[in-house]
Length: 220
Image 1: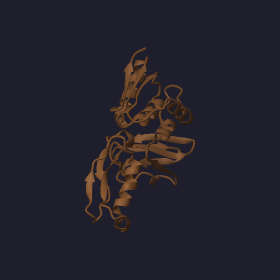
Image 2: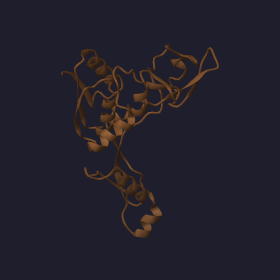
Image 3: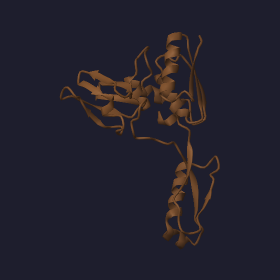
Image 4: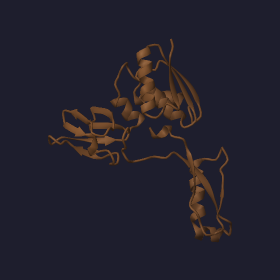
């Protein structure tokens, strides 16, 4: 999932008024950086203020809109019917709407409408989010749903860089929510007494790209 990727830095907009790049300090807010870069790129405003423009480096998480082989894709057939696949060339996915070939959406952008090759049915291929994952994952146990996830993360005052201990991984829905809250440089240590569930959770964390943030240990 995109939120688990490492952050990268890129220069903000430049201007012709002796622009120089400066690295942001650790406590500078990214929204503030963007606002300052907007000012730095506005030559008319710079001339009016009579000051030197300085473009700041912005930190952001790279995001790809393109579905590639191994991408986690949420299959949206209806609000009550969501599932997922990992995009694999030459593979097929079937549901009551028809048969859908992975080749028909690999290389396309998330959100694409994919028609069945054998019926009038169709599905949408959605970008995975914590909320969509909670609806589409295989429920090996009862899960913490998105509304409850929000209440928990809010009351724990989680933020990027936080370290969290989760007791009971279960199906991993809450683990993904915690991972998003502490990304990209935080850590979630999750413990599960059931060995099969612990192994399955770690496999999903790796496939979903959050294993750098979330680790499941088989312990009681």
